[in-house]
Image (tube, rainbow, N blue to C red):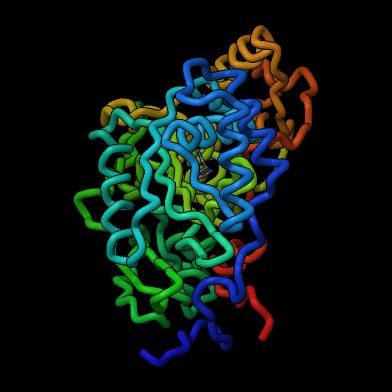
Length: 391
Ligand code: ARG
């Protein structure tokens, strides 16, 4: 491979040029205030820890979170994620401290272990792996993927796409990096791991670590013949975790799926698998007029199939009615602790049957509280195959 990796018509530098800014001392202070207020029994007093952290930032431009700080910080980042409906269990997030991994091989091994522990043969466990932070001396590792598991998309001669059209751009990027594409409708994409000392490197996700569910319908036997499937663990890899003024650019995290993410978006969006016309035809619906509500009827049946298939396969998933109720329980619980729950209505309300879930009928606080997860434009651009750095 040449020293510059070709992707599209541009070249990728490895991690961002230059160095990260020093850790934000004020934000470190706010974070420690929060931790000492919520977690009793720390080995130091707040004053002692603040003094240590300030001295460390002045000497080195950064500071090192203790294991407790990392765990609490990651959990609160989830608690503050305003787009997530599934936050009731924020305090039981499993936090894997992977800050010592430096090589792409070591990162890959930890990502595989993440998948193994998170999948837990179907009893999905919300898990995060936290890799090294950006510091003034050294950038942390990054990934170009947006999730650990995604399906490739291949444009065809007829202008349509085999696989997931939402990933055709990323598929092109990994092919240019040397990936041998099988060309099927559900090919798991390889991982691209980018560390400061190495060129971006490709790794396959070992087959045995990818739990998938074949989709069937409880009443329509033809549904199985469509050959549809989805993977069990949604694990986001392109969001930066910010805790106490420190940025962790690689901190992949997962929960379990809510059925509508698959049955109303991934398989249904016109820019994704776009399956409503296919399902409607099999259902024998009249698609000549919108007012027959053929789209809505097909949509419900896909969602029935997703929930049914995961459940019979023993893979944890939840429906949007249950998850909506849990979210209101979460808000009530947080409010009893004197905390507000920042939430984004347009993300919280499910994409089907919004008005018959209780989360529809109210407004939410919109604060940007830290710790939190952030989706940076450069991370987004890497996934689209665009060069994020002008040069
Ligand atoms: N909506 C994304 C997908 O369909 C996953 C986002 C995270 N979802 C979750 N249940 N934790 O792949």
